[in-house]
Length: 608
Image (cartoon, rainbow, N blue to C red; front, side, top):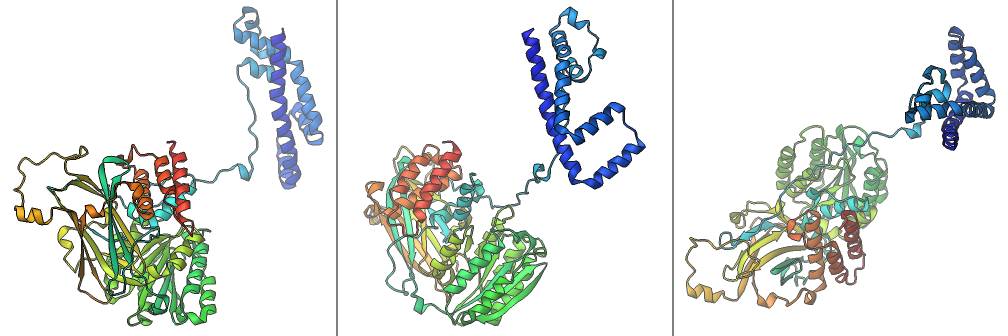
């Protein structure tokens, strides 16, 4: 009996609460919508309701609380019937004999073994918006493999000073998600940070190379060969005059807070950094390209800032037409022996006109021959075409960056404006030849999209990366010494004969030989810098290396982990965090401290 009473009480509660809520909401809705009440009344006159329904509706409209109480009273009175239904569900013969047709209301529903509940009315806040389509595109390049020195002793690649990958990875982690592995370019993460590598003495020597060899923290059987280049830093007073064209995407896809509004603030920061005699032009594109500002001297700053403030989003994206118009303005205000550069600011969505990567690549490649270079500033998410932005920047002799915050705009366009705007060397290529007597295998960490053929190194017609004022370029090889248990490749059965003893003796102390080829900004003929790598470049432990070497090693390890490189499977995020934290150094702008925090976020998100 107690179980039956409890079942009846529970059933009453389940009926009363939803019914009371429904009646209250219905009354409020009727009060708000008198025109709907009129329509309902008209329908009621044409279709008379049953007397019972009329009474219930009248009571619900006038006294909703009493209506709820009445329902509760009816449910309590029907509790015995509900109990009989419960007994019937248990299979007793006596209870099963009770006809279902005699059980009405809540008891009838219970006897049928189910509860019918009216759905609650929905409000606009209850309706979830459709998911936003993710149209981001990244180039897909497999990690560099381990190569046997006996078969391939020479490694050649182009310098890279882009930083877009690091900013995108940071944004993903700060949003609580692991980054797309295809978005991780390790060299861009390593080169995001400023390093205090030894500098060249004068502009006659555009950069200086520093090589350091250390044990590998994630593989005891290998070593890291750390190649660092530091560019000559142009004194601001000696900086050449700049002719800049802001090519700004104002298409409909840019109508988000982290796109056009952030872009406008970023360019305001850059204008404040420029010299009064520099010139700025503004071209926009959305449907059709348009000139917002003819070449204007920065001394008329108010006019430039007013033009930036007028930018509003709307339309489709005629990117190619915009690039054509920007080059025309750049030619119109060309500065002889100065900087002539277009800054393309976009989320990367080119959907009108020549929009394939190859077509735009050819367009920019042809235009750079005039001496006008093009750099890319990427903004926003969900629509970002990273693959296209990389192709445009690389073929426009420019830099690709990604701006996710105003602080990043400050870093890129103010603190590092010299490196971004003023080139000190172009077509910079690096080539390393490993000594097979000392090194069995090697693996270049990153630079997959910058690989060159061996013969490209001496071919001045082959384009490569540019280095700006004060730029740092860092490349890291993981090398396996001859005889190490970490060697992966077997010796060749039909190996070629050893070199003559005289040659072997002459280079017996060398691990590798580094060559750097570059052109001065105003020259089409390359020059060569060479550096032998010996045990004199080695440190007995990673802890004894400089803070810059240790920190850049931590960044390279982090990039490989995020890219899911199996070589780092046994090296934890905690170990990377510890290595980076111990190498932060002075960190005046907090970049390294932020990196340590990102490693910790990745550790939590990965569940490691």
